[in-house]
Image (tube, rainbow over all chains, first blue to last red; front, side):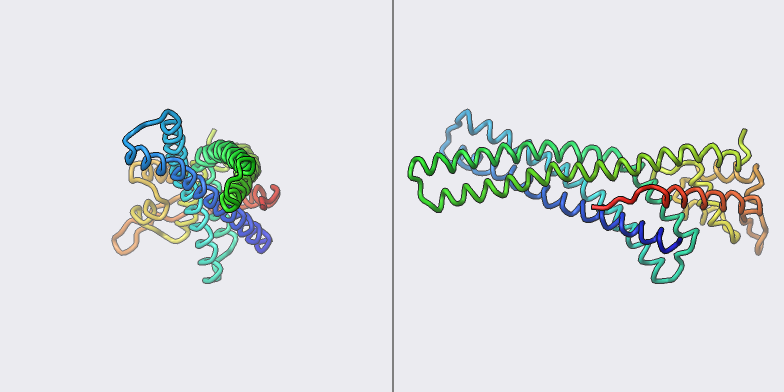
Length: 212
Length: 89
């Protein structure tokens, strides 16, 4: 029983940690996308001393993407921090052979409390991830359009290839950005159910405490 | 961490299986002194915690009554976790 629970705890933490790492990768790409739109346009505006309307649009888009990615990064780091603290706690107990019933319950309490505290962060991350997915999909279509225009206007092959690879990366990232919220949603669903059960158990715990 | 009162009570009672000082309880259970005092007073009133004297120091120790609460809490939280589906990627 204890082994099963430990294994389950470990598996859940590993899965959450894996998901958070994938999340950080997508997040870094979103950060890169923001800089990709922001910096060249800012430099061009500064060097040519002229401002075009489309450049302003791209600078705003880049800035928004950059800021959202930073917020996303902070949220992901928060989740990684929680999972690594719990993983360290399990390892420490395993090492010192103190992973008894009480220690396991303690870990479950910690996980429950951590979920309660980070529920808004998870929801925020899911929303940001979906928004980033849409942005990456738009970026992928733009890259595809540029590549096709390049083929039609006899652009150098390397330039077209770069656009195609840009499109492939953007599409893959967009797909990941839509898959991540699905798994975070699954995680939330399981924990929301557990929280519902703890709320039910509180009635019995109250009785044990002798509260009327 | 966002814990319920019941979870905090469980942490205090488990920690106090061997006599502990007020300061060590609030440090271990991550409570501020005001909230810690409220929780400890509640547990003392319900006879889940008793004061014991040790080398001139007043320590707190969980009672037999507390053991029943701890056992029920352990059972409930373990079942709750074990009986729910596992999250996997």
